[in-house]
Image 1 (cartoon, rainbow, N blue to C red):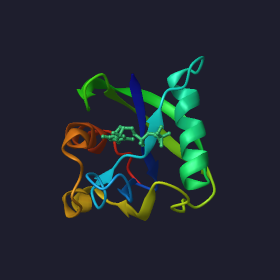
Image 2: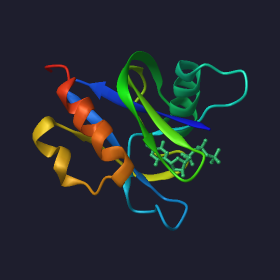
Image 3: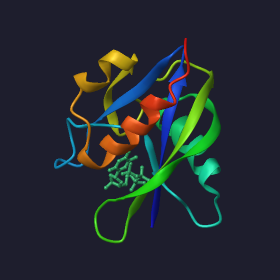
Image 4: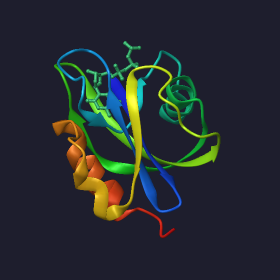
Length: 128
Ligand code: 523
């Protein structure tokens, strides 16, 4: 099972989202996203999940190379994305959102599995 997450960029910052569930992940920060549904391409998943969870429209960009194991049977793949419209709000699955500049990326407690993807995303952070 593939979980797709987005390194969402806006004006030189990366969006971090704090999970509100399940309990074992609550309070940790992630790149927002969700599971690929049958018949969906990963970019479609990303657009749908960020619309549902954050209320924004995004344009997927490139895939960040790599694949990170989650719980058994699940892997995390990450795409960059650009904010097209809307201001992200924590509509479901998250209780706080933060836009982080490059020097702030270590200021939140990322999920372990998201850390390598965040490091790669930071290298691709567009200049504001
Ligand atoms: N992760 C994860 N990092 C990360 C995401 C988006 C997800 O480690 N950046 C893990 C957390 C869950 C699993 O992937 O164990 C599924 O993510 P979830 O719950 O965000 O996927 P949804 O929204 O598709 O799940 P449902 O609520 O079940 O629909």
